[in-house]
Length: 184
Ligand code: GTP
Ligand code: MG
Image 1 (cartoon, rainbow, N blue to C red):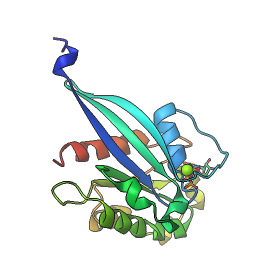
Image 2 (spheres, protein in one colour; image 1 turned 180 degrees about the vertical axis):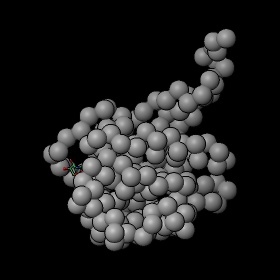
Image 3 (spheres, rainbow, N blue to C red; image 1 turned 45 degrees about the horizontal axis):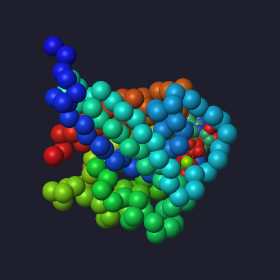
């Protein structure tokens, strides 16, 4: 039977999207929230926000608040402020640029040192190897096996994504939300 509004619960989830310059954080969010993609690169300054409302299950509405952190913030000191009260994170690298993969653990460590769940555990985090449509220019032979790498470093999942082709973005974010919902 249809539930009345009063029987539904609403969950506001603050999720951070982090990773080096130009890896596709803004593009992934735009694809996920607005179903659009642009080749044009305009670097994010500071932080941007996007909201997606999901009918998660029959009694839960999820308001997913995505914090799109500029890649250049890794060199800044605002991340402590931005990370506050986050309950999940998405770390992105560009599978065509090794330096962005090498930065993944720097982002993860920065995150874990600045925010935890109220029980002290790290916030659930997924790892995205973005630009999979460019696989022919990719790093695959140079990278460790990503599933092992992501498990070893405490990610709850790892996905090869393309914001351009809309590959795996929904699955990755659904995986993250599941982990967040079962984390407390
Ligand atoms: P900063 O805001 O500087 O931290 O960068 P960002 O991580 O937000 O990157 P952004 O989404 O702006 O994308 C950078 C460039 O990569 C843009 O030219 C995008 O069009 C391109 N791009 C993003 N995702 C993909 C993808 O999946 N495939 C391809 N081929 N290009 C992509
Ligand atoms: Mg951006």
